[in-house]
Length: 107
Length: 121
Image (tube, rainbow over all chains, first blue to last red; front, side, top):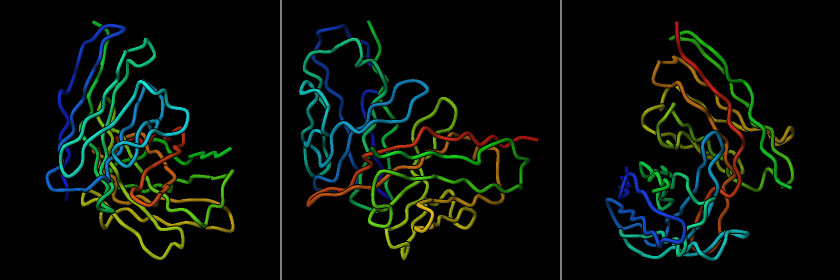
């Protein structure tokens, strides 16, 4: 199975900060990498698919980049509603796997 | 509007069984693959199983293979997950998710609200 490793596991930041979350795959997955946001008690929400394509309705402060085995999710200017947990997910293999998550909280 | 509504969760004893359902609406159900994803209390997301739109191909995480069975009924627009030989580590919220795809990616673009399965004596 393809293993996905996110870093950091947790992150404290302030409103207005630029934040980057990294995801590394255990093998090359081309651009088959998605990012989700999850708030407590809620279902995950798709943010970015195909490594860099922004899902409809997602603010442009979110962006994704990378290919092969290294990927990043960047939030250009944190807003209060962005404090949540973020997960990467590979879809290169149908045995889909998620990263362990990055919890973003307020500094 | 796409809607996914899970049901069937509850408290079950170790070794027991449950069947989860996910009622889908707002899209052509038979045209899309579907998946189940679970989340243990305070833990991350774990993909569990997937099924193609046709229902012809199914996939399972190693942790559930041989105990879980995914299926679908396009006449009822409903996805199922039969879970047998339940263990304490199967305690989780189970989400159904709609697969979507474009030329270069596959992704879960819609999720249900989840149903809680608790395995305890």
